[in-house]
Image (cartoon, rainbow, N blue to C red; front, side, top):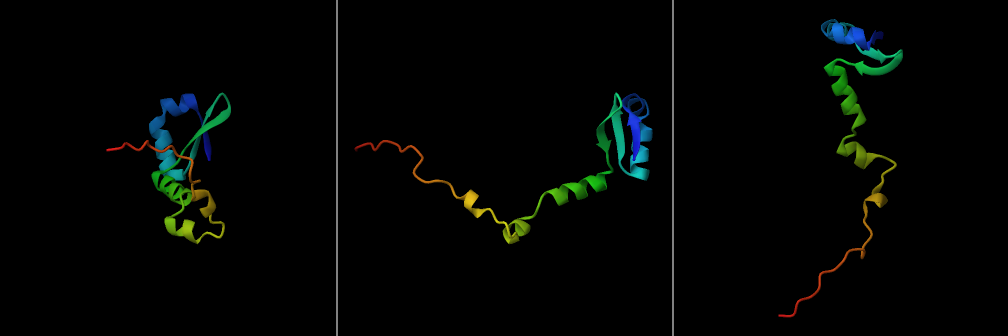
Length: 84
Protein backbone atom coordinates (compact mmCIF):
# COMPACT_ATOMS: atom_id res chain seq x y z
CA UNK A 1 0.00 0.00 0.00
CA UNK A 2 1.22 3.44 -0.88
CA UNK A 3 1.08 6.15 1.77
CA UNK A 4 -0.04 9.58 0.58
CA UNK A 5 0.40 12.67 2.78
CA UNK A 6 -2.90 14.52 3.01
CA UNK A 7 -1.49 17.54 1.13
CA UNK A 8 -0.55 15.34 -1.85
CA UNK A 9 -3.82 13.41 -1.67
CA UNK A 10 -5.80 16.66 -1.85
CA UNK A 11 -3.71 18.17 -4.62
CA UNK A 12 -3.58 14.98 -6.71
CA UNK A 13 -6.88 13.30 -5.88
CA UNK A 14 -7.39 12.00 -9.43
CA UNK A 15 -4.00 10.25 -9.26
CA UNK A 16 -4.90 8.84 -5.84
CA UNK A 17 -8.17 7.48 -7.20
CA UNK A 18 -6.47 5.99 -10.28
CA UNK A 19 -3.81 4.35 -8.10
CA UNK A 20 -6.53 2.92 -5.87
CA UNK A 21 -8.35 1.36 -8.81
CA UNK A 22 -5.14 0.11 -10.41
CA UNK A 23 -3.06 -1.01 -7.38
CA UNK A 24 -5.58 -1.47 -4.57
CA UNK A 25 -5.96 0.29 -1.21
CA UNK A 26 -4.14 3.59 -0.69
CA UNK A 27 -3.34 5.05 2.74
CA UNK A 28 -3.66 8.77 3.50
CA UNK A 29 -1.55 10.11 6.35
CA UNK A 30 -1.83 13.28 8.40
CA UNK A 31 1.29 14.57 10.15
CA UNK A 32 3.00 11.23 9.58
CA UNK A 33 0.18 9.16 11.14
CA UNK A 34 -2.02 6.91 9.02
CA UNK A 35 -5.49 8.50 9.01
CA UNK A 36 -7.59 6.86 6.29
CA UNK A 37 -7.64 4.26 3.52
CA UNK A 38 -9.14 4.61 0.06
CA UNK A 39 -10.25 1.21 -1.28
CA UNK A 40 -11.81 0.18 -4.60
CA UNK A 41 -15.61 -0.10 -4.45
CA UNK A 42 -15.60 -3.84 -5.24
CA UNK A 43 -13.35 -4.50 -2.25
CA UNK A 44 -15.54 -2.26 -0.07
CA UNK A 45 -18.64 -4.26 -1.00
CA UNK A 46 -16.84 -7.53 -0.19
CA UNK A 47 -15.74 -6.17 3.19
CA UNK A 48 -19.27 -4.97 3.98
CA UNK A 49 -20.80 -8.33 3.05
CA UNK A 50 -18.23 -10.24 5.12
CA UNK A 51 -18.82 -8.04 8.17
CA UNK A 52 -22.59 -8.56 8.13
CA UNK A 53 -23.65 -12.19 8.57
CA UNK A 54 -26.80 -13.40 6.84
CA UNK A 55 -29.90 -14.49 8.76
CA UNK A 56 -29.11 -18.09 7.85
CA UNK A 57 -25.61 -17.78 9.32
CA UNK A 58 -27.00 -16.25 12.50
CA UNK A 59 -29.58 -19.02 12.94
CA UNK A 60 -27.09 -21.80 12.27
CA UNK A 61 -24.35 -20.37 14.48
CA UNK A 62 -23.26 -22.62 17.32
CA UNK A 63 -23.14 -19.68 19.72
CA UNK A 64 -26.74 -18.59 19.20
CA UNK A 65 -27.74 -15.73 21.45
CA UNK A 66 -31.43 -16.47 21.81
CA UNK A 67 -31.49 -15.84 25.56
CA UNK A 68 -30.55 -12.24 24.90
CA UNK A 69 -33.50 -11.79 22.56
CA UNK A 70 -36.17 -12.63 25.15
CA UNK A 71 -37.36 -9.54 26.98
CA UNK A 72 -38.19 -9.57 30.66
CA UNK A 73 -41.93 -9.59 31.28
CA UNK A 74 -43.94 -7.53 33.70
CA UNK A 75 -41.75 -4.45 33.57
CA UNK A 76 -44.17 -2.28 31.61
CA UNK A 77 -46.72 0.15 32.97
CA UNK A 78 -50.36 -0.69 32.51
CA UNK A 79 -53.04 1.74 31.46
CA UNK A 80 -55.78 2.42 33.96
CA UNK A 81 -59.09 0.68 33.36
CA UNK A 82 -61.88 3.11 32.54
CA UNK A 83 -65.35 2.05 33.71
CA UNK A 84 -68.06 2.60 31.08
